[in-house]
Length: 130
Image (cartoon, rainbow, N blue to C red; front, side, top):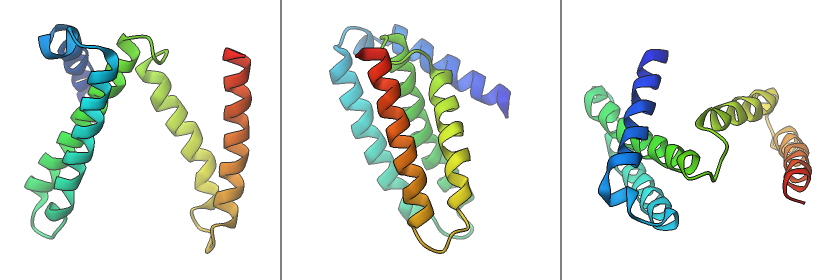
């Protein structure tokens, strides 16, 4: 699977660097485009969630993933984030910590963890940007 992730990342990087509809536009307009595309593609997933429909569901999930990977790659390419890998690392860290609340029957533990994470994120942001 890791090889496939590397391949899709390379394709997205090439897309954002060479596609004239992306390369010549402002980062804000392209980010907006990808956010809108993610929402549109996500809406197309729901009708495909049914038994004996793995082919179409996989295709639609791939579309969401493609737009997300392009968005993250664009943000890295334009210097809005440090790297694509940082997004994956942050997600793993965040949800590894939150996984402690997965088995809770109420939202108390989940909200407690989120509160700690938000405070940590604010401190990190202040340290970096003042």
